Amino acid sequence: MSHIAIPIPTIPGRHEIEIEVTVNGLKEQLHYRVELFYWDNCSNPAGHRADCISEMLAHQDPEWAVYYIGAPNDEYVPITFVKKESRRFLQHSRAIA
Image 1 (tube, one colour):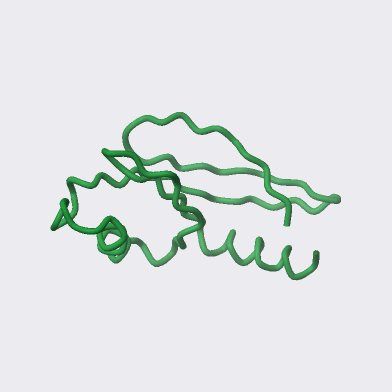
Image 2 (cartoon, rainbow, N blue to C red):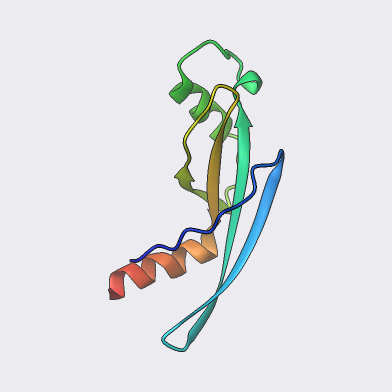
C-alpha cells in the first residue's frame, strides 16, 4: 500500500484527524488520532523508554490501534492511532494490492 504524508502541527494535546479518501472511485472515511506521550507521565521516567511506552499504551481505548510511533525527543514521543474500523479498510486494501 502506498503512503501519503500529511504534516500535523506539533502542539500539546490530542489531535483527532478524519480523512476522506477516494481511490478508484471507492470513497472511505479514515480516522486517526495523534497524541503526545510525555516521559514525565511514566511511573519510572528514568527507566527504559520502551517500557514507558508500553506502560502508557496499556491504558488506551481498545477501539484504537497503534498505527505509528514517531521519533521521540527528550520530552515526549508522538504516537499515531487508527480507529479499528479504518484499520480494517486499510488491511483489506493491502490484501487487494
